[in-house]
Figure 1 (tube, rainbow, N blue to C red):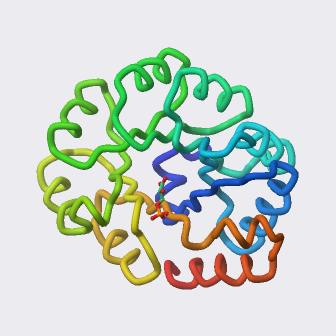
Figure 2 (cartoon, rainbow, N blue to C red; figure 1 turned 180 degrees about the vertical axis):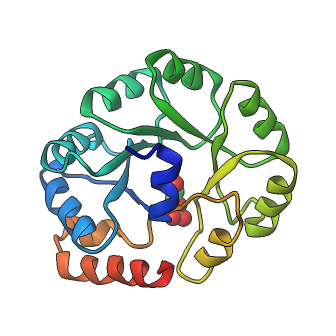
Length: 207
Ligand code: 3PG
């Protein structure tokens, strides 16, 4: 079994999802898998996140599933219970990080400056989310951080088909997160063919 970093590196792009109706999760997972992206970061921005993760996990045990926008220890528990492979938070919250470490689940917290990278490193973390990537200085900022710190990054926030390759060209970048290939309205309206088209375009861009 590959470790999380190896899996992220192989996937290159992680769809960041806000799903309002957990009953749509299995079909969404199927469209992702069939079109070359067998992974999802399901965000706790909706009340159905944990149920959606559980539905995906039951249907596709091999899929790489993360919980995103995790802000509390309670959400960490819900995510683990639902069967996630890893946890993502938008910022660096030492309480959440410690709790994930106690529970033995990988956390990829968000950082966007050198001081936060160092605080994360002090807690033993070596894979961090660079968030929000574009407003925080984009690929140029990430190159500057990568020149200094022996850390891997997952940039997210403003990553799109035009700039994704700039990020992926940075050796410390494992994968980029993004919502652009999983727009909420296509999921809500069950426009699976259009979603499949967008996802397969991503797979083509990243080769
Ligand atoms: C996230 O939570 O990672 C971001 O909201 C994703 O950012 P994007 O919508 O710009 O891709």
